[in-house]
Image 1 (tube, rainbow, N blue to C red):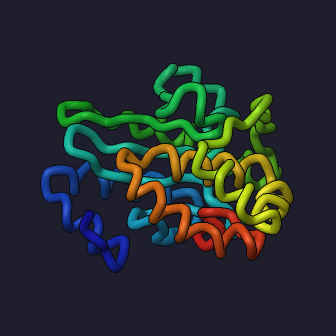
Image 2: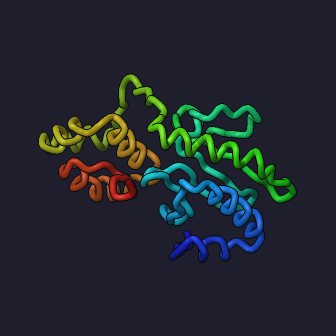
Length: 197
């Protein structure tokens, strides 16, 4: 994946989507409470330092991501949950090549998302019942009780992120390398994605 150094570099790197990206950027920045930043290799828009929106170009579409999108009324029924059953808060709106951007409607969604952030509204996360640990974790915990205790002390969200990180690796050798990498992070009480928060 190509790494970009700034929002400007990101937007210029997608000539086929640049007009759409710049229009969406302009609509978002019309809200005076929004600050433009660059995180996770995409433009991200914050309010008081909290993530509200993200903007990303893909092969077939441009996506406007709402970090607390599940709170939005979505009267136009345009928001999608990218990972049904996994993602609880985030929703995105896809714009395709021939779509005409409904400027006023996008502005309404942006303004509503900003208002939720200003009021401190967040999606109440539902905890899944039981977290099924991969064998690799179980074996590591048998060999290292300190690691087991450190993992148990993490929030459910952080535990799930680590489990998914291991389970999404297709090869056993990759799983083992990933486990090696995360052991010091678990022992330090850190989540997999803490450095991005």
